View 1 (tube, protein in one colour):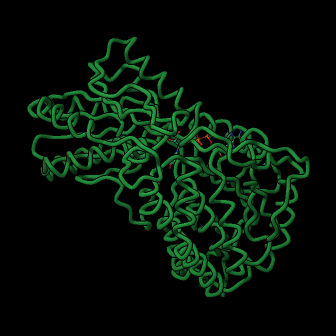
View 2: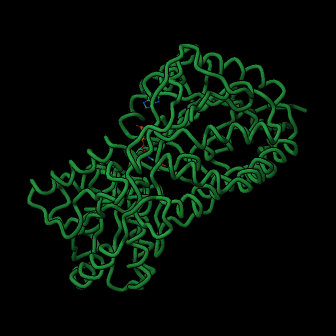
View 3: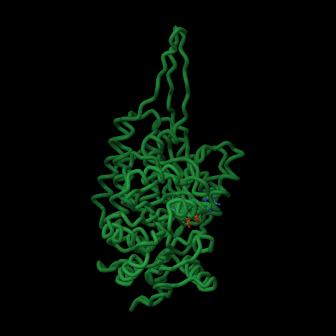
Length: 479
Ligand code: NAD
Protein backbone atom coordinates (compact mmCIF):
# COMPACT_ATOMS: atom_id res chain seq x y z
CA UNK A 1 0.00 0.00 0.00
CA UNK A 2 1.37 3.40 -0.96
CA UNK A 3 1.16 6.30 1.41
CA UNK A 4 0.76 9.92 0.32
CA UNK A 5 1.40 13.26 1.91
CA UNK A 6 -1.58 14.99 3.51
CA UNK A 7 -1.50 18.65 2.54
CA UNK A 8 -4.39 21.10 2.64
CA UNK A 9 -6.80 18.24 3.32
CA UNK A 10 -5.72 16.33 0.22
CA UNK A 11 -3.64 13.21 -0.30
CA UNK A 12 -0.91 13.89 -2.81
CA UNK A 13 2.29 12.39 -4.19
CA UNK A 14 5.67 14.04 -3.53
CA UNK A 15 6.61 16.61 -6.18
CA UNK A 16 9.94 14.97 -6.94
CA UNK A 17 8.29 11.54 -7.18
CA UNK A 18 10.87 10.14 -4.74
CA UNK A 19 9.74 7.11 -2.75
CA UNK A 20 11.03 4.96 0.11
CA UNK A 21 10.24 1.33 0.87
CA UNK A 22 8.13 0.59 3.92
CA UNK A 23 9.02 -2.67 5.68
CA UNK A 24 6.97 -5.06 7.75
CA UNK A 25 9.39 -5.98 10.59
CA UNK A 26 7.48 -9.17 11.38
CA UNK A 27 8.51 -10.77 8.07
CA UNK A 28 11.17 -8.43 6.71
CA UNK A 29 9.17 -7.74 3.54
CA UNK A 30 8.47 -4.46 1.80
CA UNK A 31 4.73 -3.87 1.86
CA UNK A 32 4.41 -0.38 0.50
CA UNK A 33 6.06 2.87 -0.36
CA UNK A 34 6.12 6.28 1.24
CA UNK A 35 7.08 9.69 -0.15
CA UNK A 36 10.54 11.03 0.51
CA UNK A 37 9.32 14.60 0.58
CA UNK A 38 11.57 17.40 -0.57
CA UNK A 39 11.92 21.04 0.40
CA UNK A 40 9.24 21.84 -2.17
CA UNK A 41 6.74 19.51 -0.46
CA UNK A 42 7.52 21.03 2.94
CA UNK A 43 7.05 24.49 1.42
CA UNK A 44 3.69 23.39 0.02
CA UNK A 45 2.69 22.10 3.47
CA UNK A 46 3.89 25.33 5.06
CA UNK A 47 1.88 27.50 2.63
CA UNK A 48 -1.22 25.46 3.31
CA UNK A 49 -0.73 25.81 7.09
CA UNK A 50 -0.06 29.54 6.73
CA UNK A 51 -3.30 30.04 4.78
CA UNK A 52 -5.30 28.16 7.40
CA UNK A 53 -3.81 30.04 10.35
CA UNK A 54 -5.78 33.34 10.28
CA UNK A 55 -9.10 31.51 10.59
CA UNK A 56 -8.01 28.62 12.83
CA UNK A 57 -6.26 30.89 15.32
CA UNK A 58 -9.50 32.88 15.70
CA UNK A 59 -11.75 29.83 15.90
CA UNK A 60 -13.48 29.71 19.28
CA UNK A 61 -12.06 27.44 21.94
CA UNK A 62 -15.37 25.67 22.06
CA UNK A 63 -15.22 24.81 18.36
CA UNK A 64 -11.57 23.72 18.50
CA UNK A 65 -12.38 21.58 21.50
CA UNK A 66 -15.36 20.01 19.71
CA UNK A 67 -13.20 19.07 16.71
CA UNK A 68 -10.39 17.59 18.81
CA UNK A 69 -12.81 15.49 20.82
CA UNK A 70 -14.45 14.31 17.59
CA UNK A 71 -11.03 13.21 16.32
CA UNK A 72 -10.51 11.24 19.52
CA UNK A 73 -13.89 9.56 19.08
CA UNK A 74 -13.10 8.55 15.52
CA UNK A 75 -9.73 7.15 16.56
CA UNK A 76 -11.59 5.03 19.10
CA UNK A 77 -14.16 3.95 16.53
CA UNK A 78 -11.29 2.83 14.25
CA UNK A 79 -9.28 1.12 16.96
CA UNK A 80 -9.05 -2.27 15.25
CA UNK A 81 -7.88 -0.88 11.94
CA UNK A 82 -5.39 1.50 13.55
CA UNK A 83 -4.05 -1.09 15.99
CA UNK A 84 -3.49 -3.54 13.14
CA UNK A 85 -1.74 -0.90 11.03
CA UNK A 86 0.48 0.12 13.95
CA UNK A 87 1.43 -3.45 14.73
CA UNK A 88 2.22 -4.25 11.10
CA UNK A 89 4.30 -1.12 10.62
CA UNK A 90 6.22 -1.33 13.90
CA UNK A 91 6.37 -5.02 14.83
CA UNK A 92 4.77 -4.48 18.25
CA UNK A 93 2.25 -7.02 19.54
CA UNK A 94 -1.26 -6.13 18.46
CA UNK A 95 -2.31 -6.54 22.09
CA UNK A 96 -0.03 -3.57 22.90
CA UNK A 97 -1.22 -1.32 20.08
CA UNK A 98 -4.83 -2.10 21.02
CA UNK A 99 -4.37 -1.55 24.75
CA UNK A 100 -1.86 1.30 24.73
CA UNK A 101 -0.92 3.03 21.48
CA UNK A 102 -4.31 3.68 19.94
CA UNK A 103 -6.32 4.40 23.13
CA UNK A 104 -3.57 6.80 24.21
CA UNK A 105 -3.66 8.56 20.84
CA UNK A 106 -7.40 9.08 21.31
CA UNK A 107 -6.78 10.31 24.88
CA UNK A 108 -4.26 12.84 23.63
CA UNK A 109 -6.90 14.54 21.46
CA UNK A 110 -9.59 14.28 24.13
CA UNK A 111 -7.26 15.58 26.82
CA UNK A 112 -6.10 18.65 24.88
CA UNK A 113 -9.63 19.23 23.54
CA UNK A 114 -10.68 19.63 27.16
CA UNK A 115 -7.49 21.30 28.41
CA UNK A 116 -7.77 24.20 25.97
CA UNK A 117 -11.12 25.16 27.47
CA UNK A 118 -9.43 25.43 30.90
CA UNK A 119 -6.24 27.19 29.77
CA UNK A 120 -6.23 30.78 31.02
CA UNK A 121 -3.82 33.67 30.88
CA UNK A 122 -2.70 35.62 33.93
CA UNK A 123 -3.42 39.19 34.94
CA UNK A 124 -1.57 41.33 37.48
CA UNK A 125 -3.01 44.32 39.21
CA UNK A 126 -0.15 46.79 39.66
CA UNK A 127 -1.24 48.22 42.98
CA UNK A 128 -0.21 51.85 43.54
CA UNK A 129 0.38 52.40 39.82
CA UNK A 130 -3.26 52.32 38.72
CA UNK A 131 -2.47 49.78 36.08
CA UNK A 132 -3.49 46.30 35.09
CA UNK A 133 -1.18 43.94 33.27
CA UNK A 134 -2.73 41.09 31.40
CA UNK A 135 -0.94 38.45 29.43
CA UNK A 136 -2.11 37.19 26.08
CA UNK A 137 -1.26 33.62 25.17
CA UNK A 138 -1.16 33.72 21.39
CA UNK A 139 -0.53 30.83 19.01
CA UNK A 140 2.88 30.92 17.38
CA UNK A 141 1.73 30.42 13.79
CA UNK A 142 3.01 27.45 11.81
CA UNK A 143 4.84 24.90 13.96
CA UNK A 144 6.76 21.71 13.17
CA UNK A 145 6.18 18.37 14.92
CA UNK A 146 8.66 15.53 14.35
CA UNK A 147 8.22 12.14 16.01
CA UNK A 148 9.98 8.76 16.32
CA UNK A 149 9.01 5.17 15.47
CA UNK A 150 8.61 3.49 18.85
CA UNK A 151 5.11 4.71 19.78
CA UNK A 152 4.16 6.10 16.38
CA UNK A 153 0.63 7.51 16.60
CA UNK A 154 0.83 8.01 20.36
CA UNK A 155 3.83 10.37 20.22
CA UNK A 156 2.74 12.02 16.96
CA UNK A 157 -0.62 13.03 18.47
CA UNK A 158 1.02 14.01 21.79
CA UNK A 159 2.48 16.96 19.85
CA UNK A 160 -0.19 17.66 17.25
CA UNK A 161 -3.11 17.79 19.70
CA UNK A 162 -1.71 20.61 21.92
CA UNK A 163 -0.35 22.44 18.86
CA UNK A 164 -3.71 22.70 17.12
CA UNK A 165 -5.71 23.04 20.35
CA UNK A 166 -3.80 26.26 21.06
CA UNK A 167 -4.55 27.67 17.60
CA UNK A 168 -1.44 26.82 15.60
CA UNK A 169 -1.32 25.17 12.20
CA UNK A 170 1.06 22.27 11.84
CA UNK A 171 3.57 20.72 9.46
CA UNK A 172 4.18 17.28 10.93
CA UNK A 173 6.49 14.42 10.05
CA UNK A 174 6.18 10.94 11.51
CA UNK A 175 9.11 8.57 11.44
CA UNK A 176 9.79 7.23 7.96
CA UNK A 177 10.07 3.79 9.59
CA UNK A 178 6.46 3.81 10.87
CA UNK A 179 4.36 6.20 8.76
CA UNK A 180 1.13 4.23 8.41
CA UNK A 181 -1.06 5.43 11.29
CA UNK A 182 -0.06 9.05 10.67
CA UNK A 183 -1.34 8.58 7.14
CA UNK A 184 -4.62 7.16 8.46
CA UNK A 185 -4.93 10.10 10.86
CA UNK A 186 -5.26 12.37 7.80
CA UNK A 187 -8.36 10.43 6.73
CA UNK A 188 -9.84 10.80 10.20
CA UNK A 189 -9.19 14.56 10.22
CA UNK A 190 -11.02 14.93 6.92
CA UNK A 191 -13.95 12.88 8.14
CA UNK A 192 -14.23 15.01 11.26
CA UNK A 193 -14.06 18.22 9.25
CA UNK A 194 -10.81 19.63 10.61
CA UNK A 195 -10.43 22.72 8.38
CA UNK A 196 -8.04 22.18 5.48
CA UNK A 197 -4.45 23.13 6.16
CA UNK A 198 -4.65 23.07 9.97
CA UNK A 199 -2.72 19.80 9.97
CA UNK A 200 -0.35 18.84 7.17
CA UNK A 201 1.57 15.58 7.22
CA UNK A 202 4.69 15.15 5.12
CA UNK A 203 6.53 11.85 4.96
CA UNK A 204 10.19 11.19 4.35
CA UNK A 205 13.67 10.82 5.72
CA UNK A 206 14.90 12.92 8.61
CA UNK A 207 17.79 14.19 6.58
CA UNK A 208 15.57 15.43 3.74
CA UNK A 209 12.02 16.09 4.95
CA UNK A 210 12.81 16.59 8.65
CA UNK A 211 15.73 18.84 7.85
CA UNK A 212 13.56 20.95 5.53
CA UNK A 213 11.04 21.49 8.36
CA UNK A 214 13.74 22.46 10.85
CA UNK A 215 15.44 24.78 8.35
CA UNK A 216 12.26 26.49 7.22
CA UNK A 217 12.64 30.13 8.25
CA UNK A 218 8.95 30.63 8.99
CA UNK A 219 8.23 27.48 10.95
CA UNK A 220 8.82 29.15 14.28
CA UNK A 221 8.71 26.26 16.74
CA UNK A 222 9.88 22.66 16.57
CA UNK A 223 8.59 19.98 18.87
CA UNK A 224 10.84 16.96 18.44
CA UNK A 225 11.00 13.51 19.99
CA UNK A 226 13.80 11.18 18.99
CA UNK A 227 17.44 10.37 19.54
CA UNK A 228 19.86 12.61 21.43
CA UNK A 229 22.23 13.02 18.47
CA UNK A 230 19.36 14.11 16.22
CA UNK A 231 18.16 16.50 18.93
CA UNK A 232 21.60 18.08 19.15
CA UNK A 233 21.69 18.50 15.37
CA UNK A 234 18.22 20.08 15.33
CA UNK A 235 19.21 22.48 18.11
CA UNK A 236 22.26 23.53 16.10
CA UNK A 237 20.19 24.27 13.01
CA UNK A 238 17.20 25.88 14.73
CA UNK A 239 18.83 27.92 17.50
CA UNK A 240 20.43 30.61 15.29
CA UNK A 241 16.93 31.22 13.88
CA UNK A 242 15.64 31.65 17.48
CA UNK A 243 13.00 28.99 17.11
CA UNK A 244 11.18 27.67 20.13
CA UNK A 245 12.41 24.14 20.75
CA UNK A 246 11.05 21.24 22.72
CA UNK A 247 13.40 18.25 22.63
CA UNK A 248 12.40 14.88 24.09
CA UNK A 249 15.43 12.66 23.69
CA UNK A 250 17.01 9.37 24.76
CA UNK A 251 17.22 7.73 28.15
CA UNK A 252 19.13 5.17 30.20
CA UNK A 253 16.78 4.92 33.09
CA UNK A 254 17.62 3.37 36.45
CA UNK A 255 15.19 0.96 38.10
CA UNK A 256 16.20 0.95 41.79
CA UNK A 257 14.88 -1.89 43.91
CA UNK A 258 15.12 -1.90 47.72
CA UNK A 259 14.54 -4.98 49.86
CA UNK A 260 11.56 -3.37 51.60
CA UNK A 261 9.42 -3.11 48.46
CA UNK A 262 6.27 -5.10 47.64
CA UNK A 263 8.23 -7.87 45.98
CA UNK A 264 5.65 -9.53 43.73
CA UNK A 265 4.31 -6.25 42.41
CA UNK A 266 7.86 -5.05 41.78
CA UNK A 267 8.82 -8.26 39.97
CA UNK A 268 5.81 -8.21 37.67
CA UNK A 269 6.22 -4.52 36.86
CA UNK A 270 9.96 -4.83 36.35
CA UNK A 271 9.41 -7.46 33.64
CA UNK A 272 7.10 -4.98 31.93
CA UNK A 273 9.34 -1.94 32.43
CA UNK A 274 12.21 -3.91 30.94
CA UNK A 275 10.58 -5.46 27.89
CA UNK A 276 7.31 -3.73 27.00
CA UNK A 277 7.30 -2.78 23.32
CA UNK A 278 10.47 -4.91 22.88
CA UNK A 279 12.22 -2.54 25.30
CA UNK A 280 11.78 0.24 22.76
CA UNK A 281 10.24 2.82 25.08
CA UNK A 282 12.33 5.81 26.08
CA UNK A 283 11.05 5.25 29.65
CA UNK A 284 12.03 1.60 29.98
CA UNK A 285 14.11 0.89 33.07
CA UNK A 286 17.14 -0.51 31.30
CA UNK A 287 19.53 -0.45 34.29
CA UNK A 288 18.23 -2.53 37.18
CA UNK A 289 19.94 -1.95 40.54
CA UNK A 290 18.94 -4.36 43.33
CA UNK A 291 19.75 -4.10 47.03
CA UNK A 292 22.35 -6.75 47.85
CA UNK A 293 20.24 -8.59 50.45
CA UNK A 294 17.64 -9.62 47.82
CA UNK A 295 19.91 -9.62 44.77
CA UNK A 296 20.29 -13.39 44.32
CA UNK A 297 16.60 -14.06 44.89
CA UNK A 298 15.63 -11.32 42.45
CA UNK A 299 18.10 -12.57 39.86
CA UNK A 300 16.65 -16.10 39.95
CA UNK A 301 13.00 -14.99 39.94
CA UNK A 302 13.47 -12.32 37.28
CA UNK A 303 15.37 -14.55 34.87
CA UNK A 304 12.78 -17.27 35.32
CA UNK A 305 9.97 -14.86 34.42
CA UNK A 306 11.87 -13.40 31.47
CA UNK A 307 12.46 -16.86 30.05
CA UNK A 308 8.69 -17.37 30.03
CA UNK A 309 8.09 -14.37 27.76
CA UNK A 310 6.95 -15.50 24.36
CA UNK A 311 8.68 -14.04 21.33
CA UNK A 312 6.32 -14.32 18.40
CA UNK A 313 4.45 -12.81 15.51
CA UNK A 314 2.87 -9.47 16.52
CA UNK A 315 -0.60 -10.53 15.39
CA UNK A 316 -0.72 -13.49 17.83
CA UNK A 317 -2.58 -12.71 21.04
CA UNK A 318 -0.13 -14.86 23.01
CA UNK A 319 2.92 -12.87 21.90
CA UNK A 320 4.72 -10.89 24.61
CA UNK A 321 7.66 -9.73 22.52
CA UNK A 322 7.12 -8.91 18.85
CA UNK A 323 9.65 -7.90 16.22
CA UNK A 324 12.18 -5.11 16.57
CA UNK A 325 11.38 -2.20 14.33
CA UNK A 326 13.99 -2.64 11.59
CA UNK A 327 16.89 -4.72 10.42
CA UNK A 328 19.38 -1.98 11.22
CA UNK A 329 17.95 -1.52 14.70
CA UNK A 330 18.14 -5.27 15.33
CA UNK A 331 21.80 -5.15 14.26
CA UNK A 332 22.44 -2.22 16.60
CA UNK A 333 20.87 -4.01 19.59
CA UNK A 334 22.77 -7.20 18.79
CA UNK A 335 26.01 -5.24 18.62
CA UNK A 336 25.51 -4.26 22.28
CA UNK A 337 25.14 -7.91 23.24
CA UNK A 338 28.47 -8.52 21.51
CA UNK A 339 30.00 -5.58 23.38
CA UNK A 340 28.77 -7.08 26.68
CA UNK A 341 30.38 -10.42 25.78
CA UNK A 342 33.58 -8.68 24.78
CA UNK A 343 33.62 -6.83 28.11
CA UNK A 344 33.14 -10.17 29.90
CA UNK A 345 29.70 -9.34 31.26
CA UNK A 346 27.52 -12.26 32.27
CA UNK A 347 24.58 -12.96 29.90
CA UNK A 348 22.00 -14.47 32.26
CA UNK A 349 19.43 -15.20 29.56
CA UNK A 350 18.64 -14.38 25.95
CA UNK A 351 21.15 -12.81 23.61
CA UNK A 352 20.11 -14.61 20.44
CA UNK A 353 18.00 -13.89 17.41
CA UNK A 354 14.77 -15.86 17.20
CA UNK A 355 13.43 -17.46 14.02
CA UNK A 356 9.66 -17.38 14.25
CA UNK A 357 8.20 -20.19 12.17
CA UNK A 358 6.81 -18.93 8.89
CA UNK A 359 8.38 -15.50 9.45
CA UNK A 360 12.06 -16.40 9.42
CA UNK A 361 13.11 -13.04 7.93
CA UNK A 362 11.48 -11.02 10.72
CA UNK A 363 13.57 -9.08 13.24
CA UNK A 364 13.10 -11.06 16.44
CA UNK A 365 15.41 -11.12 19.44
CA UNK A 366 15.25 -12.95 22.76
CA UNK A 367 14.70 -10.77 25.82
CA UNK A 368 18.16 -10.44 27.27
CA UNK A 369 19.38 -9.93 30.84
CA UNK A 370 23.02 -9.05 31.41
CA UNK A 371 24.69 -9.07 34.80
CA UNK A 372 27.31 -6.33 34.99
CA UNK A 373 29.89 -5.58 37.63
CA UNK A 374 30.27 -1.87 37.07
CA UNK A 375 28.02 0.99 36.07
CA UNK A 376 30.83 2.30 33.87
CA UNK A 377 30.56 -0.41 31.21
CA UNK A 378 29.16 0.53 27.83
CA UNK A 379 25.92 -1.44 28.20
CA UNK A 380 25.18 0.61 31.32
CA UNK A 381 26.12 3.94 29.80
CA UNK A 382 24.74 3.90 26.26
CA UNK A 383 21.12 3.73 25.17
CA UNK A 384 20.42 0.33 23.58
CA UNK A 385 16.67 0.82 23.11
CA UNK A 386 15.84 -2.85 22.73
CA UNK A 387 14.92 -5.93 24.80
CA UNK A 388 18.13 -5.79 26.82
CA UNK A 389 18.49 -4.89 30.50
CA UNK A 390 21.39 -4.99 32.91
CA UNK A 391 21.42 -6.16 36.51
CA UNK A 392 23.69 -5.06 39.31
CA UNK A 393 23.62 -5.20 43.13
CA UNK A 394 24.11 -2.22 45.44
CA UNK A 395 24.71 -1.82 49.17
CA UNK A 396 23.79 1.70 50.16
CA UNK A 397 21.44 4.47 49.13
CA UNK A 398 24.37 6.81 48.40
CA UNK A 399 26.08 4.23 46.23
CA UNK A 400 23.00 3.57 44.09
CA UNK A 401 22.22 7.26 43.79
CA UNK A 402 25.71 7.89 42.53
CA UNK A 403 25.35 5.13 39.92
CA UNK A 404 21.85 6.20 38.91
CA UNK A 405 23.10 9.72 38.20
CA UNK A 406 26.36 8.68 36.54
CA UNK A 407 25.09 8.67 32.96
CA UNK A 408 24.68 11.44 30.45
CA UNK A 409 20.91 10.91 30.33
CA UNK A 410 18.19 11.97 32.78
CA UNK A 411 14.75 11.02 31.53
CA UNK A 412 13.04 8.84 34.12
CA UNK A 413 13.77 6.70 37.17
CA UNK A 414 11.84 4.07 39.09
CA UNK A 415 12.13 3.50 42.84
CA UNK A 416 10.81 0.43 44.63
CA UNK A 417 10.60 0.96 48.40
CA UNK A 418 8.04 1.39 51.14
CA UNK A 419 10.24 3.78 53.06
CA UNK A 420 8.63 7.20 52.72
CA UNK A 421 11.59 9.23 53.92
CA UNK A 422 13.91 7.44 51.53
CA UNK A 423 11.45 7.99 48.69
CA UNK A 424 11.41 11.71 49.31
CA UNK A 425 15.18 11.98 49.83
CA UNK A 426 16.01 10.07 46.69
CA UNK A 427 13.39 11.73 44.52
CA UNK A 428 15.02 15.06 45.39
CA UNK A 429 18.46 13.85 44.34
CA UNK A 430 17.78 11.73 41.26
CA UNK A 431 18.67 13.53 38.06
CA UNK A 432 15.57 12.84 35.97
CA UNK A 433 12.46 14.59 34.71
CA UNK A 434 10.15 11.83 35.93
CA UNK A 435 10.39 9.63 39.04
CA UNK A 436 8.02 6.71 39.51
CA UNK A 437 7.71 5.21 42.98
CA UNK A 438 6.31 1.67 43.24
CA UNK A 439 4.93 1.86 39.70
CA UNK A 440 6.05 2.40 36.12
CA UNK A 441 4.56 4.23 33.13
CA UNK A 442 1.58 5.39 35.13
CA UNK A 443 0.56 8.54 33.30
CA UNK A 444 -1.60 11.51 34.15
CA UNK A 445 -1.61 13.74 31.08
CA UNK A 446 -1.67 16.91 33.20
CA UNK A 447 1.83 16.30 34.56
CA UNK A 448 5.05 17.72 33.06
CA UNK A 449 6.80 15.20 30.84
CA UNK A 450 10.43 15.43 29.73
CA UNK A 451 14.04 14.95 30.68
CA UNK A 452 17.17 16.65 31.93
CA UNK A 453 20.81 16.44 30.75
CA UNK A 454 21.10 14.64 27.38
CA UNK A 455 17.45 13.56 27.63
CA UNK A 456 16.31 16.92 26.40
CA UNK A 457 14.98 20.36 27.16
CA UNK A 458 11.43 21.53 27.72
CA UNK A 459 8.38 19.73 29.04
CA UNK A 460 5.37 18.31 27.27
CA UNK A 461 2.02 17.47 28.84
CA UNK A 462 -0.81 19.50 30.33
CA UNK A 463 -0.54 23.28 30.37
CA UNK A 464 3.24 23.02 29.82
CA UNK A 465 2.51 21.92 26.25
CA UNK A 466 -0.04 24.69 25.73
CA UNK A 467 2.51 27.20 27.04
CA UNK A 468 5.14 25.85 24.65
CA UNK A 469 2.82 26.25 21.67
CA UNK A 470 1.88 29.85 22.57
CA UNK A 471 3.76 33.10 22.95
CA UNK A 472 3.13 35.19 26.05
CA UNK A 473 2.50 38.86 25.35
CA UNK A 474 2.06 41.19 28.28
CA UNK A 475 -0.27 44.16 27.90
CA UNK A 476 0.09 46.94 30.50
CA UNK A 477 -2.97 49.19 30.72
CA UNK A 478 -2.72 52.43 32.66
CA UNK A 479 -6.03 53.75 33.94
P1 NAD B 1 15.65 9.59 15.42
O1 NAD B 1 16.28 10.73 16.12
O2 NAD B 1 16.45 8.80 14.48
O3 NAD B 1 14.37 10.07 14.59
C1 NAD B 1 13.29 10.77 15.17
C2 NAD B 1 12.61 11.60 14.11
O4 NAD B 1 13.51 12.62 13.70
C3 NAD B 1 12.24 10.83 12.85
O5 NAD B 1 11.01 11.30 12.36
C4 NAD B 1 13.38 11.18 11.91
O6 NAD B 1 13.03 11.07 10.55
C5 NAD B 1 13.63 12.62 12.29
N1 NAD B 1 14.95 13.15 11.94
C6 NAD B 1 16.11 12.48 11.81
N2 NAD B 1 17.10 13.32 11.42
C7 NAD B 1 16.55 14.55 11.33
C8 NAD B 1 17.06 15.83 10.98
N3 NAD B 1 18.33 16.02 10.62
N4 NAD B 1 16.22 16.88 11.01
C9 NAD B 1 14.93 16.71 11.37
N5 NAD B 1 14.39 15.52 11.67
C10 NAD B 1 15.18 14.44 11.66
O7 NAD B 1 15.02 8.68 16.57
P2 NAD B 1 14.28 7.29 16.40
O8 NAD B 1 15.32 6.26 16.12
O9 NAD B 1 13.12 7.45 15.49
O10 NAD B 1 13.70 7.08 17.87
C11 NAD B 1 14.40 6.49 18.91
C12 NAD B 1 14.92 7.54 19.87
O11 NAD B 1 13.86 8.34 20.33
C13 NAD B 1 15.52 6.92 21.12
O12 NAD B 1 16.71 7.59 21.42
C14 NAD B 1 14.48 7.20 22.18
O13 NAD B 1 14.97 7.26 23.49
C15 NAD B 1 13.94 8.50 21.74
N6 NAD B 1 12.61 8.73 22.32
C16 NAD B 1 12.48 9.67 23.29
C17 NAD B 1 11.24 9.89 23.88
C18 NAD B 1 11.04 10.94 24.94
O14 NAD B 1 9.91 11.26 25.23
N7 NAD B 1 12.09 11.47 25.54
C19 NAD B 1 10.13 9.14 23.46
C20 NAD B 1 10.32 8.17 22.47
C21 NAD B 1 11.57 7.98 21.90
